[in-house]
Length: 396
Ligand code: NAP
Ligand code: MG
Image 1 (cartoon, rainbow, N blue to C red):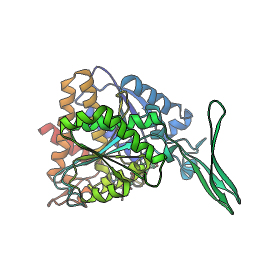
Image 2: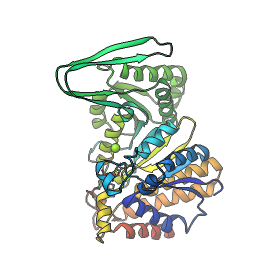
Image 3: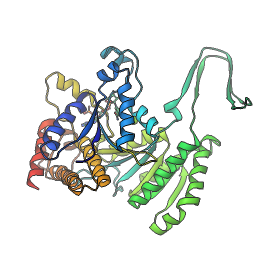
Image 4: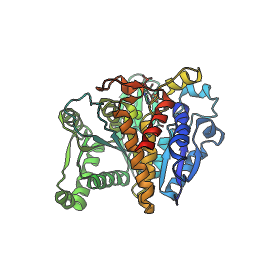
């Protein structure tokens, strides 16, 4: 390796897996160079979350990062970790800093068939990673009163709309997005579609949200017409816009093999649906792509807290490390591509092949064993599965 990867360590079971993957599958085979940032909750708390900001800045500098799953604190975590503050979601901080789009795709392997039997090819979800409900302002309305939406322009002029006249307690939420972020989301999706030569679907609720959602639809259409229409036509791919409920219905009937662009919340919800229907949350890859070509790879799942508590209690776990390893291989391959390092790229390819071969030969973790169509399956624990991948890798 010439340029280092930005390495963001994380929490709980995925932190345990992180160490094992490095020791068993990376360090023995490559001269791994990383800039290490410990995003484990304890260290975020010690540094007043500065470490998260520093890791995002380093990602901008070096161009490629790999991230372990991290805890997003809630009330229970405040006491569990004795936190100074309820720190923000690291993913939220990193996404806001990079202004990126998250692409999530299932890892397809023989023997793990999707629940939706007509899905023959992967569906890649492109999630807008800025704004909406993830950057909201909320009020718990105590009682009767009038709620208004007010915008004060730089020159002092006001736009004012009544939201609701409350006659009793209720709730209020203010959300926003920017044309700039929506435009870079659109370009990221169009570029990615051209990159992997797949159709692009996009959907919002523009019939109900005539200004907010309609703005997404219009920006996508303007950019498509001005910059991408011809490129799509010569690549033989299609840009298709519809309403979000229609999109959901069509996805269930589709064959797959396309990119589904979703607003931030839709992408959060739909990517978990798509990944679990393709087999397992642990078989979903995730990459954040910024408009200026910075990449951050991670697994789509969380820190697998329930398994971690079993691990702490000394019980055996069978946690699937596939998406975490694919985060590493994705980052290493991209690093290799940017640095013209073919050896590093073929290492990543070979390690991925070793994973798929291991599973296809019937050696897998419990989550996959429960859903596989293969017979004579050997269920392995967390560590033995990683060691088995190493054995396959050595034999390839
Ligand atoms: P989770 O870690 O994704 O796990 C939910 C459940 O899915 C697990 O209990 C397990 O089911 C199954 N699962 C997920 N990954 C698995 C794997 N690799 N192997 C086997 N089974 C797997 O979600 P969570 O428990 O709701 O969240 C735990 C913590 O993760 C939270 O603190 C949350 O803030 C954080 N989180 C972080 C990220 C991120 O950093 N990107 C994303 C989401 C959540 P069974 O228990 O039935 O085996
Ligand atoms: Mg989610």
